[in-house]
Amino acid sequence: MGLEIEPSGQACGATVRGVDLRASLSAETVAEIRTQWLEHKVLSFPDQILNDDDQGRFTQYFGPFGDDPFFDPVDGHPNVAAIHRGADETTPLFAESWHSDWSFQQFPPDGTCLYGRVIPPAGGDTLFANQTKALQSLPPELRAQIETLNGIHSARLSYAPDGMYGEHDDAAGRQMSITYDESAYDTQLHPLVRTHPETGEATLYSTIGYIIGIDGMTEADARELLISIYHHQIDEAVQYRHVWEPNMLVMWDNRCVLHRATGGYEGHERLLHRTTIGYNTNP
Ligand code: SIN
Image (cartoon, rainbow, N blue to C red):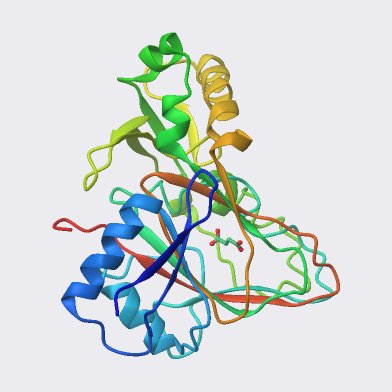
């Protein structure tokens, strides 16, 4: 039986049924999933009972494991990280700002897989924003202004010693194991507008936060320009709200969506396991 695909009806996202991700997948099924992933950008697979090995095997159908800095992995699984918040935790929410995963790397990851283990009864949705649609929504003069510019990406605001998770972070009670180091000061240039290597679609790439400036512009001018793009990048019209269920695997395409975590589940635990689909030179 082929895959059953139910589009979300929002700016991206689809639910996929008719496949058991515990099994080895045929090349044909993997190709079918990849086609749907490229079309819908975010795929969710409900009712999948997976362990970390299953999640790792699924991830590697789509590329090599990515390099995950600033997290300690879960025991025994160097490529799996826990996105975990305790029921009574009061630290700032992890990943609450819009971002594309690890965009500050030279070769940022193509995608991310997140598997819901403990899901609160309400709240904790993940928001996605379709950056192909966001680019299409830019006024022509704004698009022309940014078309050839390169963003300066860096992890420093979050993971440097003086960043949010650095020396002054009050991590008391935090379930997640987040680390910081000097490498977060490194910078990397990427075009603000990129061509998706598989679909050929033009798309905005990443956003203010991991983009700390624009090559060749003053900090103030860059900030103003990044903020004017940001309003389009996260407009409700380009969003998809993902509502989690336990035993659901979600995969998203970092090359053309932004995402962010949301709260609203105080008093309840939330635990997801995350794997990264690395940069694929030959998708
Ligand atoms: C993430 O950005 O990896 C986490 C998203 C979430 O917790 O919803």
